[in-house]
Length: 130
Image (cartoon, rainbow, N blue to C red; front, top):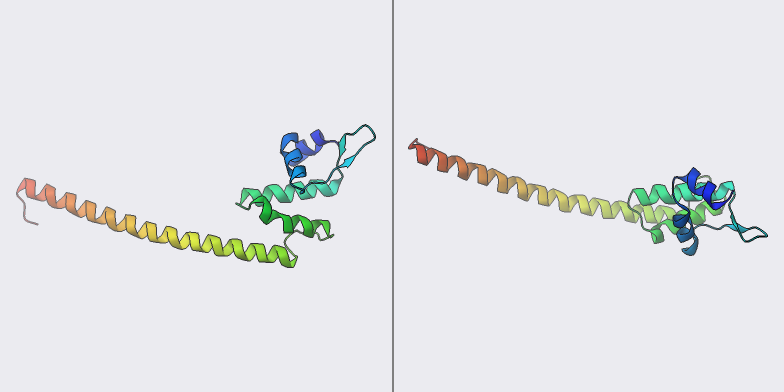
């Protein structure tokens, strides 16, 4: 298939595919007239790239998954290097969630104090006991 067809089937653009090619992730064949020609395996590679990008992986993180697919595996996440990237990414997400939990607690405490302070001021204005 030509680059336009691959782009359409993969839900991306020819420009993006050319970028993936410059990054060494996608490997087209060249026809006699110089056109890029892709086989079905490249469609699977592009789907894998797009799925991993969608969940926050960078192109360097994606390389082991592509290599795993190119090695003939049905999934890009079964090879040791891919598993190592998944573990590292999971640790990053866990650390981020921990930081977010701290931010949430701080915001909750600040909001609770602000509401209590506001209610106290309202009661004082009305001359009501606290």
